[in-house]
Image (cartoon, rainbow, N blue to C red; front, top):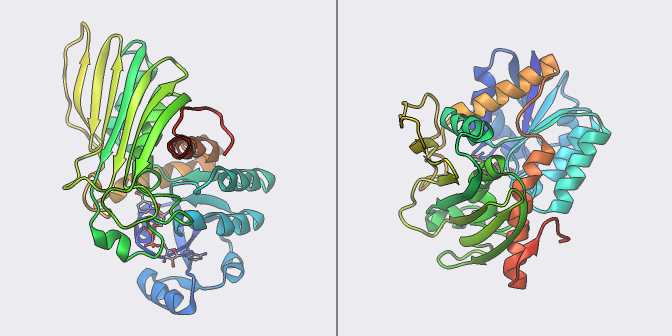
Length: 342
Ligand SMILES: NC(=O)c1ccc[n+]([C@@H]2O[C@H](COP(=O)([O-])OP(=O)(O)OC[C@H]3O[C@@H](n4cnc5c(N)ncnc54)[C@H](O)[C@@H]3O)[C@@H](O)[C@H]2O)c1
């Protein structure tokens, strides 16, 4: 049985609490919020001991894992404190908002010998896993093009009611780093490493510091190319979409579900998917908690059996690297070759 504490008790924390409670070998035992008032509210909401002081929280008896649900650019400090205290970590995406901060976090986990998993729950949809297995088995042949489109919409309140969303310091930007990153993570998992990209970001609709529209042309190390678009300005918000084209066939994953699948010489058959994510295209909380639960179950199992798990710090860094490269390309108005210095 692994005992878990959650730090950051806003919107996503409830999905983690429900996931932990649904797993038989995990138990939520404490939460930590940023002020005594919020800690009091959190104690009532989550029904476990709540702290407002992180050092006191970390001394709660027998804590094994800390789940970090603070705002994106506020992941590092609590993560460093938890790693130093010898706690394993599950951190919400993105790992952090700059590569320097992500590297500090990854290094601290290595130094203190703790495991780090970053939430990219869409990896656990059964249709995504079917697509990934087929790509890895070479069923689509040599990969020629991989595209990721996250043409979403958020209303004005989404940003105006938050003290950090859309800010450069704490969100790291806007639509790409907060929303598009899930689909970019999947694209990289399918297509492999990036060799260069040319990108452009704009703020076309919302009153925010970060971008609400970003596009890029990407070259992958395997020779394939691809397009990325990510937005929170495109009403009404369409299901996110990944397109994979290879020399022997193509597939489309839309809203977590395979909607097109065709391989030369084999019968096209779309089976009903077993577990897929409802899309957050128009509503940030329309995400299905089952995928978080599957990632939790995998991580707990890996701790108990010293096994592998899907998204460690280095893996999670790749989507951040692509997005930081895209921001840099837009700023310089030129192609960015990977790896690059920020
Ligand atoms: N996986 C997903 O689909 C998904 C969905 C939504 C949010 N997220 C991620 O979850 C994280 C939180 O997002 P949210 O929507 O829950 O935000 P939120 O604003 O609702 O909650 C963040 C909470 O963190 C608290 N906080 C900030 N700094 C703190 C600190 N140092 N100590 C303790 N508490 C602190 C804030 O007071 C707030 O309660 C973000 O990184 C976001 O990208 C992921």
